[in-house]
Length: 321
Ligand code: SF4
Ligand code: SF4
Image (cartoon, rainbow, N blue to C red; front, side, top):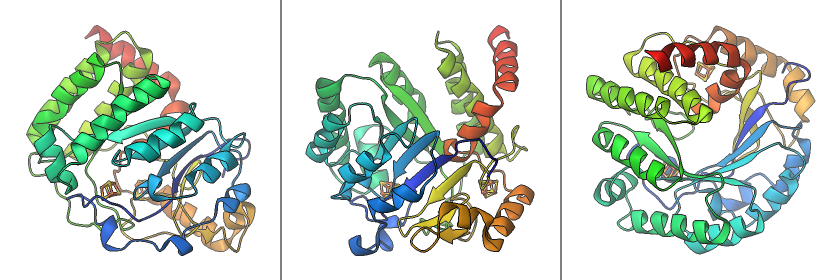
């Protein structure tokens, strides 16, 4: 890891999940609660620029408050990704930690979302969670996350407009495979249609008055390149300034390698030992040479922040076109 640069770390708190999403098999191979890493391991992490708590469903952890307490002062920002099902629990935790960002998965209309997520009433729960969070702590850093795929690309723009009209953040990911989530058969068949919708989203972001959303237009442009399998405009920084920590305490450069790439485990090594280990260094070298074209906010967010000049130039060129 480059000295002096605070990393971006995603903590996979659990592989347990109440949903059975069509694009993720996390629920088929869940962690046992007793095997999940203890909040005490957070003491071993370096100071972080940003920490994303993810899963599985992070709110299935009974000790998420302890995780959040341990992260205070350790990271500049905390974001939790959730499927939004456990309204009461989510509201209880978010009321205690009002500065934490929350992204709730919504993949389209009620019917589409429930079908994709494999739970008959998950849309109602997620929407109820959004309403209640707004009442409890306002709209600050609250938003939805949309996973674009063949099943729902026609609903991308309606959901973006819904979020804009409600003053909520709108983020998206493009469906992808991941060894960690036991999924290797996600494919995109409607490439052209998905690209058309992403082009509309890019314009939608650019037409706002919000510079952060202009940067999302740049991210959307990268996602278009990913769908078209055109070389991405920024290299990824996995293993150098962005990392994943698995529910077992394994430190990995990213979540996208076809097989798990474990640099070391926080249960028996310090962060520095992992970074300086032969295994850690050889994985970083593999990442540097990696020719995969992945484009997700977890592995590109840090690079985008470090390439601000390039992104500003892109925005200027594209806003005036
Ligand atoms: S995508 Fe998220 S909500 Fe769906 S099964 Fe996987 S971890 Fe659970
Ligand atoms: S490009 Fe390679 S190293 Fe980077 S996120 Fe993808 S699989 Fe990981």
